[in-house]
Length: 417
Ligand code: GAL
Image 1: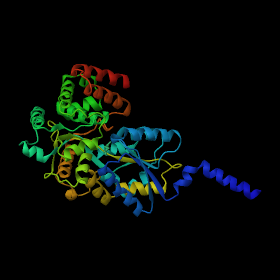
Image 2: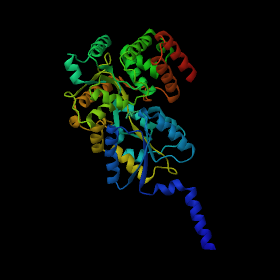
Image 3: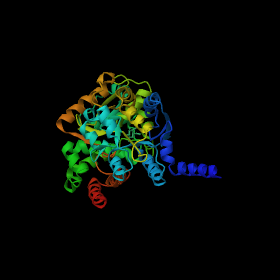
Image 4: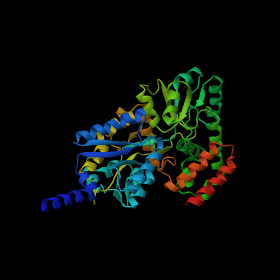
């Protein structure tokens, strides 16, 4: 009888503390939205790295570029007290979970491995909460890129457009030759990704910061912002009729296969070219959205780990260490299309697009002009971000005037603040 009671007690304790008991098992559950060909391949580097540290990777993929679906699933799992061990997170979302005390403090590991010295400050700003490391950054993506099919460009004697007007003129030439000028997927986050570039092109880094980071009503309601919407309207004219709902990687395939000439997308698109065996400069071109040459709009993928009791579990620490490993970051980013989050990883393994990104990043860091992507949660918190998504997507999918969109933008931010 006594024995039975003890057994029942043990079962009860394990059930009650299921999370901490599991924390000691040799398994780490990782939630992410990297399900495209290139993304999945890059993730393989981290899976191998974790295995080498003696832990099994329990995969929890939630399809949906930009991570909106993953964020929704995470909310539900946290509400039912069953968060994954580690999760991919962007920008302000990290602070949101840290604020509620869900995330493990990684300071001792950060000190041991010297993360403070190798991660650029604009990224640490999101990795840390109240001065403590709560997330580990694996890459630095840039959103103001255009990916182009080189064969189409060569055939039509086109070179990377240096101004937005030139892009419009080139698109007309491409259309006339029977190609789709712009491959686009009609999902709010993809329209928002284009908007990052349009705002930067219309006003430059200072204006971008005033409008999308400081949420200054004068900047949001300005003529310059109207110009950004004018660009969006012109881009809308370059897409094909089947764009609604299309996934971003299918749009990239249209450029890879020569159906479309260009895609405006962050450099995770390069991961799809790499995965298809295509070479930069030979099969495809990478260049900045006109008017944003040299500007660096960043998006960095980080992983946060959920607290087990007071701290991180050994498996979570092994995972964080895997993500921050110099060799892993070198390999991962060659496949993913991004550049390493650690500045001490040499550039030699990167192709010409990656090398360009790294050079531009260093210049932007020096000049203080590295700005966070609005579309990917690094400019404003999720509340106002979602409100601006609605404005941008409504504009792109209607005949609204730029002047009206700007008015709606000011209103949306006002309501969401
Ligand atoms: C972004 C993420 C990138 C990328 C993209 C498409 O939010 O930061 O790494 O993969 O979504 O899924």
